[in-house]
Length: 202
Image 1: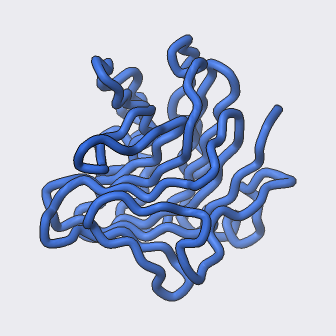
Image 2: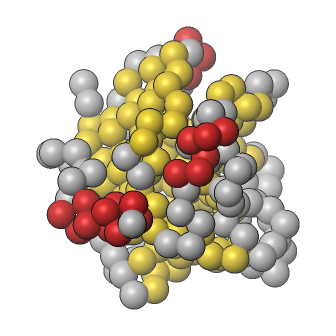
């Protein structure tokens, strides 16, 4: 029943910030840059990331950097859904897929969706994970809604309307860069995305 309620709220736009703009046009990857050999494509108006033959990490980053914002998007895990949403990130390095930034986790059940992981040189790894009871808020078989609010040194994440974590961190506060979607290494991964909207904050 709760997932039916969430579906209704999605359709009415309840979860989306007022004054937001779309980052994905539902037709192509305009406004984004692909990093790596994994697959990123549009299918039925949805953005899809899928493991390629090399089974490596892959990223799709916004061409524009974002510092302070509210990001809303929907995702659906297909196959192994190990993925993530990086904020204030930079992708490059010799292989073109080395990332620096902070990841809001998107993953299969009980693998800390909504938690924050640091991927930087000398990074701290997991900074904060959701309470185990809140991890049950993930719908493993259908669409989920993620909201990320980043303002200064404070980051808050919500999954399907439930706050997952709240973090104040000086290092994150100093960061600046793109929003990037991730596909994890290892192969067998497929995730769908849609309704990617952002409201920039002062």
